Image (cartoon, rainbow, N blue to C red; front, top):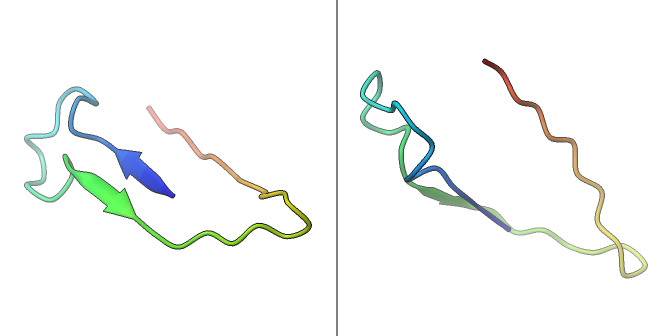
Amino acid sequence: MYVDRTRSGAGDFDSTFPGVRTAPLKAKNGKVKLRILIGW
């Protein structure tokens, strides 16, 4: 799985914020479960 924050808007508060993050994600019985948290 990956999350691309390169075009997420203002990222000048932290030099590590804009970028692409990756992590392994294994399916269980052909499905994945995601919890997505969004803060503004």
